[in-house]
Length: 262
Image 1 (cartoon, rainbow, N blue to C red):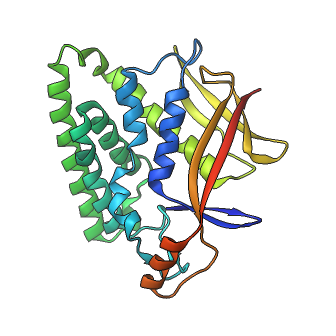
Image 2 (cartoon, helix red, strand yellow; image 1 turned 135 degrees about the horizontal axis):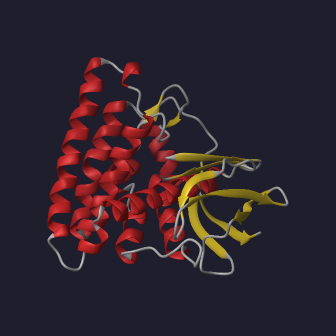
Image 3 (cartoon, one colour; image 1 turned 120 degrees about the vertical axis):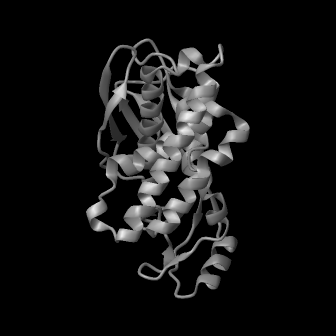
């Protein structure tokens, strides 16, 4: 779960909604400069489902006693975070091997890119290594079957897989920036193009974070309108049961963000 703080109050947005938004970005992506997405449906599905491991937790979120809110995704205890990511790719596998591969790579990429073992207990550090070993073996199993498949073989070269893994990561960060609704947004770096990489800048149009100017323009449409949902959650809680009940009763909000070229 993540939170957008607005003048009107706090909006809770689930990880599943954030992933849905990633999928919307993926389906609009691609032009002469940025190249195409291939295999398109599988990569878009991987983007859309990359946080599917959070489904059970989002249905009954646990309370962070420090904040009085459900844990946000970056506050989760290590054991819970590992449990979520250990199941994610297997949940996607019934939909297809290629999207499952990308979801698994997204999880291992989080730990390979941002994890600092020196800040962990020995037990947690070992649990992370066990998770990485498990996922890497799973990835190799999937790659072996995909490379033996004439349809998927062209998309399983190291270069093709690395490009698609990077695209999932870019859409993930892009979606998070939209969900948080900050007026000042960090540039998105190392974004794959047709021939190289570039940096995307996101600028609030007229200081409105629901209208963003994207430079350079990565989409095949003249403008892109994204529709997603959140819930109003202004209170904080000391009791987990009360928090869950309040979240069930919380008012739903339809959110929109429109993207424009420079």
